[in-house]
Amino acid sequence: MNRIRFFSISCLAVFVAPWLHAQSFSETVLKTEKHAPVCGDMKAFHERSTVANLPGCVEVENRACPEGASKCINFYPYVLAKSKIELEPAPASISITPIDDLGYYKARFWLTSLIISRSTSFKEKLILDRSNGADTFDEIWEWREHLKALGQLQKEINEALESAKAGKLPNSQGFIDTFPAYNAWFETWGPQLESKVKSKFLETIKVLDETSRKKNYIGAVSEARRALNIIRVLTDNGTADDYQILYEDRDLTIQTRTIGPLRTQLTSFLADIEPKAEAQKHQKQEREQNKWGPYLAVIKGDRLQYLNSYREGWTVFGPERSIIQKPQDFVQARAMYTCYVDEKTLTWSVRGGHFEGDRQIGGDYVATGVGRECPSSAFK
Image 1 (tube, rainbow, N blue to C red):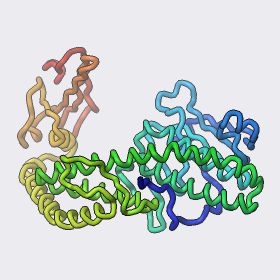
Image 2: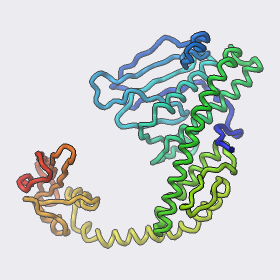
Image 3: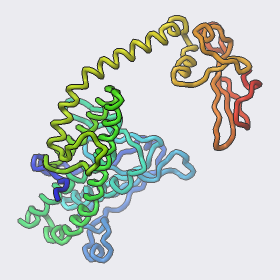
Image 4: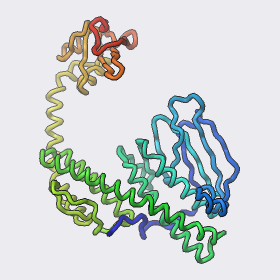
């Protein structure tokens, strides 16, 4: 059976500069702990198979969360070159810096194994630095970056093995002895990532089917682009066009199963529906303008924040829990509020402000209490 390949022949050669640093975006609140250089111990490695005992020397630096910190994730390393990860709340981090040539591969393997095993619980926003500027991705699926990291690492490890066999690496025999451990790790994570990719692609195609049947062309364009993006990532990692990414599923409108024909079919489909999606966007904008134009024409200043809440689906209240809906209601209300009820704790909170003209005065108003609804007495 064809499987996803985790390295591409067209990839660049092994990086020359051997520096990889995990970054934290709140380093000022973190405690820093530096360790003595960690070097290989082949006997210990064969006994315990710990990454720290791989051949090569590295410097390890931990930035730990201070005691009592409420907004600190205990651990988050990363390995991707020329990138940064922004997380909320701010994470602690680890930096593993190679000291010698073998330490480079050890650091790459160590950090890649950490990011793949540790990052599944985080939602990250990744900004990749490109030669033509920074591309920001609002949604990055973790498997995509795992696939990229795993592919880059496997290619480098395989190239290092060839160099070791030719005696071109310091401690070449130590690297050769360790290679089976690297390879076993790839064989463990490869199928897991392959399953993730297939599941994500199937989910995307099902949503594409649904949006297409409902003639939601805006949504269909988004899902088609997402599916093509998944195929692009696989192709960039060396996956052949005859790779079967879709399982058999009679409910799917798309019957193609391999990524080459799927790329062709999805590209053609996208070209057909993009004009329809643009027309839908224009119609939607016209409807929005017709609906909210009368509001925006008269509501100004600090009052706009309550109109925005109303547009997002919140009920906006006036004094004594009166409901504000019409444009003139927003203009004339001496106070405006929103109400939130937490069904888990059975508590409510009212937040609002008092107005003179278009300006809020006296700061924000907040009232809280116990119960399933906000009482009229809270809207003062």
